[in-house]
Length: 253
Image (cartoon, rainbow, N blue to C red):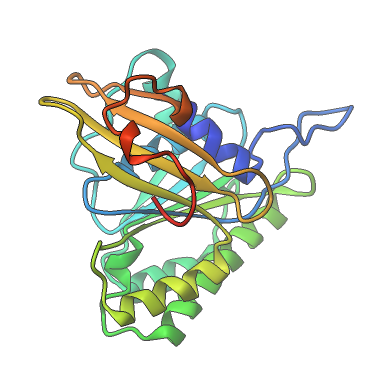
């Protein structure tokens, strides 16, 4: 269930190999932009990353989304440990104005700083007649907020940042300009592409580009009828119905 989240954490270096001899610490890595069409599993992967970070014994997780989740992704055992769920702080800014206010006021918030900042549905906050300048301001404010949390946490750890953005297969020139701008702020990107090989199955291909900080990687993600998520490396999918499409990582999936 959480192997994809673990891979996302490697990009962010959340609890990964940056350990000191005296204590287990991790530097926060580059922000990650999670890209995919409608129903491509962006929210499920964000929630998996939240659960993984919440189980590390560090600070809480701040999960921002415009509306409450309709249901929690299914899982078993530690995946839905109540103690982990209690460490995930959900906040629902209903508009871009409220989102900006929330991020600006984060500098005054009391209590332990989040170890991971998540924003689901960025596109919903960019539809209010926003141009490139406003989109750049929001992206910069997200980075600044994560940097502030990192400063609060202290050296050697930091706060990770993952933002999910819905993209359309046939976007207009404005959408392309907006995406190009956001990619400047989010060098690491994970592209999700839905692929349904047979009746009753829901699958997708995930391609992670760490922004020049490591090798590109791909996975085959399958959702079982009970909602359980399984992830395997893309090249290991022998007999994969989509293998004839090629597993090349050139360009976006």
